[in-house]
Image (cartoon, rainbow, N blue to C red; front, side):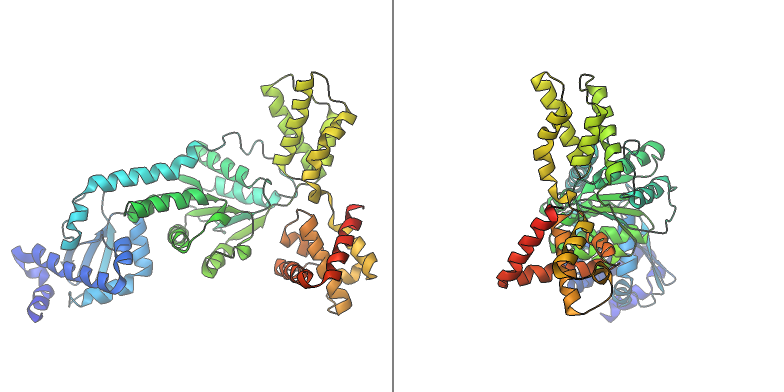
Length: 484
């Protein structure tokens, strides 16, 4: 052992034996890393690292991707140095570089030779995984652009933030990263992501954009595991400038989350942009690790609320103009468009669905749709979005009157039981009967935090299980609110 160490120490002066000695020394370093880290971690981060040179105390090693270089330098630098010092006694520093494509691995550990000698399998796997991840790009909805995205008070901040990302120059660091957008289904999150991806690809083709759903991410990772080549999966994120993830709430499984965390940290740490869309805010991602939730909150978190009447009218009109271009026979009067916007209080999907229903009814019956007939046809569609028609102001009015508590008291900071219980019931009703987000409900109830609303909802839900009187009282309150 002493003899081996001595040879390693003088590797820079060992003449013809330099490469062989370096290979042997690095082989022992690799074996020790594998022993201390375990097969999974070693194969993920160090299996494709090679030692290239050891001169004047500087050990140069190389890896095939920028992603690996960044991750090793940020997470394993101390471990790598500690293990390498056992073999390279005069070690002063370890320099990690990225190999150029096509370079051969010259000093790999013997145990890895069989895997390295079969590039065809790795190349095929990488190509397959890339196809899986890029599938969302081919199926993206090109009709969803910024030009046909209706901006109003409900989505003003989300739209402005996404536009900042779209207009940023390549390599420009924004003041927020990641950008996290959340809302109920159908309020335009996916539309914004599609519009962002298309704008960047059209105006800044040098910026590489990858847009995928959480489901697609999981599918690609599962394939990589089955192919025993997770590095091919990681490589797909190394050159991404803007990563867009939709339906993030569906990301499940510890291994999946760890893999996403690796990709996320690498991109954010290297000042590349991540934009995430989900149905709930980061604090409500109960299946996601707390550290990951904390990082998601470290950027800009914005919610999209349900559109008001004016914004709904603009959405209906825009959808109708698009429909008219495709089918000039789809004539609908302005009064009926007003009725759709008034009756359907959800997002763009519900509004478009109601409009389609009216046009279909007109075409199938070969007769124009009158205002009275439209009202009847929309009755069922409006029932599907009944929760959107209930206003928080109505809830405050009913709760205040029922419990004989002043509206100002409900919105105040008072903690007396005769005020706290009605306030919590009001928050509960707002969550159950409206499409408003938790943060918005909190703001409407005296500027409270969303966690306060969540606590109230959970508390009332729990008490109802064992309190029949409370259950009956809530049923009465719901009827009273719906009659407003």
